[in-house]
Image (cartoon, rainbow, N blue to C red):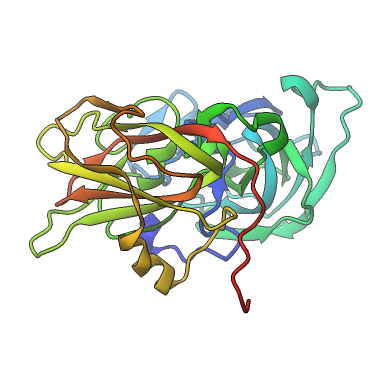
Length: 350
């Protein structure tokens, strides 16, 4: 089953996976990881199964797996989220775990200041946000969160033992606009709340990684469309993490050597607020948004920087549309700018 085959619930649609290893999430502690390490559960790519692969501990599994418990109790693991955020819900994924999945699980969350991690025996306050629930073999379990607080860590309990292929923590990164107002940030960064809302095609790669930190690892670590055989061009619409005046744009075609787009353009608009969804009419109308960056040529496997002298003068924007001509791959997109505080735009008659 590929990611496009999975029907995501509303809470996961256009949300950020706060437990993404590629965004910086990491395991903090675990009671047992004999068969498969905790860090593997945070991988961005879908879990795989290799039938004849074994290691020194037994069958190689793509996820976190503890040994069989013989002394009572249960296993649990603590994960530091990539960035503090409000958690919408979870994908507790037991893909390929058929006779070794946990029958039940529960999830707690905590908020620790200053980049600290919980330590065994400390006074960390844990809030249960997923009550103990049943799990089944080889499937995705989508479970909503019971809290809208901002959290920095989650702790997943499995009863009594077993393996989870992936844990996705869907939510919204917390960005304190008052603290960052007037400062230059990457408005499109997933760590700052940037989200991909719509796209023409995303046949190859992990398209949401276009907003991830760092450069792409390979051609699978970015947005790549199939070869376009008809008229038109491909595009992607992104909700910025905060309203801002764009000062410079970076388009990175890392690893795309024979399949980079010939050229690109960037458009923008101001909805007055950073919305999580656009309807079909708004997506169609985006083709006519004002230009921030006029159509310009791209090259293979390189970073393209476009400064304020290249960009079209404009006011604050909340959304951007990246157009590529005619098709191809983009590894990363950075939309740098100063965050502005603005009142929501009121549409007459609304």
